[in-house]
Length: 494
Image 1 (tube, rainbow, N blue to C red):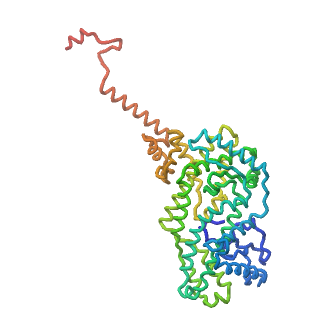
Image 2: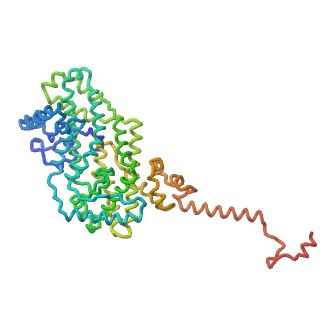
Image 3: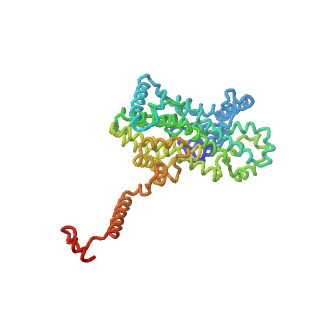
C-alpha cells in the first residue's frame, strides 16, 4: 500500500506477494494491484495487448462481463446499492474476500478464550481508570467477519473522499470531452466506482488478515460496546515473540477493552473522529492540468471505438495527487493528534493495569510500538484513505503526557479531561505537556519537565529568603555567644 490519499495510487503495485501471480503476464511482472492502471478490477490484465502476450480474449471476456454487469445495474443502482454510489462496494467486498482467501473457522473454545480474557482485563482496568467498563459483548471474528461487520464504518469514511474525487475528476475533463461524453458520464461514474472499489477491496482484504482487534486502526470499527479479537491474526502475531500465548491474548484484550471504554463513555469522541475525516474529504481538490494534456491528443470518437483509451485516461487521472488546502492540513493535524491521544491513553492505562500482573507487558507494549513505527497495516490503510500516518513520536509523547498528568494529579483529573473536547490537549500541548498540566490542575508546573531545574529553583529561593532574613535581623556583635548581653551594660550605653 502507499501513502497517497484514497483513490490515488502509484503506477506500481503495492503488495503483490500476497496475491496469486498473474498468469497472463508475459514479462514476469506482477499485476498493478490497486494502481490506477487497473480500474476494472481485472488484477492487472490488459485485454488490448498491452503486455508481451498480445491480445487476450479471456481477459476481454472478463472485462466485457464486468461492463455488462455495470451497465445493467446503472438504472437500478446495482440492486443492493453496492454499485450505485461513489464506491462500488460489491466489487470491494468480493475482491476483499478473494484477497483474504482461506481462513480458519472459529471454534467455541476460541470465542470462550476471548471472552475470558476480556473479562479479566476489564477487572484489572477498573483499578486504574474512572471510566467504567464499556464492553457489553466480547467475541472473536474471522477475517471475513471483520470485513462484513466493519464495512458500514468504512463506507462512511470512504464515500465523502470518493465522491469528492469523482466530482472533481468529471469536472476536470476538457470541455469538448464533457460534451461528447455526456451520455457516457453515468458509465464513467460506474467505472470510477469500480476503480475505487478495487483499491478499497485490496486494502481491506490485506488488512482483514492482519488486524488483531476491532480497534487496531485506532477507530471504532465494531458495533458500540463490542470487544473483538481475531485469533488467526493473533496467532501469526505471536509467532516468534517468545512470550506466553495466554499473556499475549490478555494484553491485546486489555487494549481492546480500554479502547471500548473510551468510545463508549466519551460520547463525542466517535462522532468527532469520523466527522474530521469527512471534513478533510470535502476539501479535496485536484490539479487536472495533467489529465487535460493527456486528453488533448485523444479523438473523442476513440473513447467509443477503443475502450483502452478510456482505461488509459482513467489511469492517468488516478495518478494525480490532490491539492492540500490549509483547512485540510488543520483537519489532518487534529485527527492525528486525537488518534495519538487515544492510543497514548490506552497504552498508559494498560501499562498501569498489567505491569504488576503480566511479566511480558512491557515487552509487548514495545512490540506494538515498533509495529506502528514500521508502518503496520493499520497505518498504511489509513494513509491510503486520508493521507494520514500516526507518527510514533507523537504516540510516545501522547503517552508521556498522560503519565505526567497522572503523576502531578490523580486518576480522576486525568480521565476528567475526556469530559469535553475543549478540555483536550492539542498538538502544542503534546509537545509541551507542562503548560497543559498547568491549565488542568492549576499552580506552577512550568519546570515539570526538568526536575533538576525545579530543585535548583527551590534551593535558590530558600537561599534568597535566608539572606533577606539576615539583612532584616542582623546578629548582635556585642554578644559573646554565651547568652544575652549584660542589661546594665546596655543601660550605660543608653
